[in-house]
Length: 478
Image 1 (cartoon, rainbow, N blue to C red):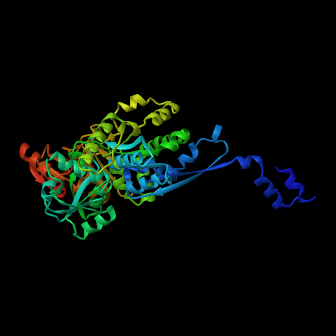
Image 2: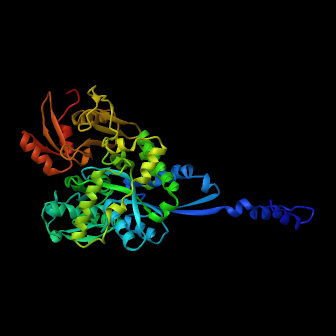
């Protein structure tokens, strides 16, 4: 305590004198208040374990360094939510945000913008990825006559410009040899595009996670194209200001430890996690689960895999050809040193995880067909309203489960199956089916896209069916 201050108060030490003395004490004079701006995208489901989950669970506060040069630090966390990547990049260039998260195309623009304005940023970790490009998609109104990308020639289509979905659409045109003016493309945010689609002011809307699943789930849209058709990996990742990371590397690793912990929290109890994320972000839990639950569309993995960097190089070439991005030195932009150090401090094997592409899968025992649930390509799940998520070993068994539970008066939050062609999780009631009714051994094969179901049915002697028709083609007891 500051003795001179106390002496000036006289023989009786008033409370305010004590407070004043404490404020002037040597310890408090050395305290440094460090404000850390973190740019999040709460409604972009694939970033939630890098943002809102860490925030709500208090993980970063727990992991921030408090010893050595940080022993007198006072941290002030500024969580700044945006609906897309560009506002986060703007915040990073203004040094209001030091750590941000966004999809692959916005990340490239983030890196290029930083390098060309003397505010370099670095890609330091991945949050979630899909190796085939699943997650981004194009939707039409549920009553639309359009069922595939080819139907959109000359049509009015919107997408958030500069987003991962915009990149997916550019890639889809290039891979088909189609010109940029194949459609009339305009920039609309998820909110504006969703409203315009619902009111039939546009023919189609392209968007990033979770909107291509969310809009059909809400009942007024139908998905006609998925990024998995491009076979080009897509991901969301973590970007940091280079100057901040070099000055405070322990804070970057503290954040990455929090990310890894958040991923584990999601995997440990995905149903509860989806429910909590719905509470925090207002994105329906059923949609959160289709992306981040077991066997979900995206894999939670913080390692920076070569296939993702290869996709960055390819995507950058597309943007460069269209004159839509400034020069980017990808080698200088990518820095896996921080995530490697994080793995080392946690006692984890980075190189082993770097080479792994497995995810956690749906497991259990099928209660209808009395079979183990062990084939990720065939599994189904029924989320009973007010109850559990029940696993099934095949599409037929899952639909038999739906009929059985319905006869018992149960209702459902969602029914999930796996698309036979694209290998991604789909909502059963939004899928198309190739069916071959048989009293003893019925065939039910689910697809996201009508054209894939038609092709499979024609090749295998079946017929195209809707969800209701697929249900009617089987009977409990088969």
